[in-house]
Length: 82
Image 1 (cartoon, helix red, strand yellow):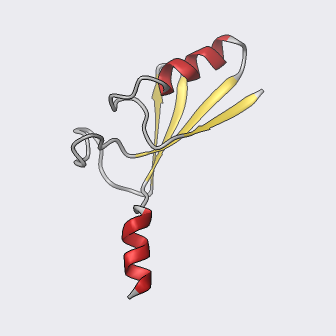
Image 2: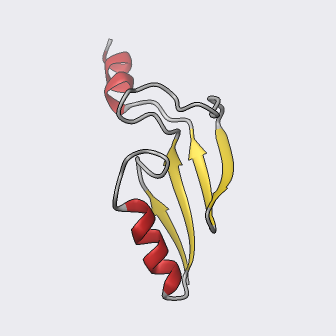
Image 3: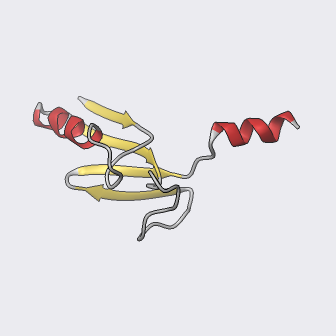
């Protein structure tokens, strides 16, 4: 089965559930892809080696990872309410 993991945080950020969960699914024979934002947690600054663009495709271990540019909902709400 093809599975898409949609998460705000994923490796290389210090989150402990994403990668082990993806590995466990893959070990059960599933094809796993990850859709996430650009790594910036916990500092809020983009990690070295990344540039802001609409989409960045990469491979982490055996997983296809798609990092997307997104705007926080709070900022968007503040902009729209004016």
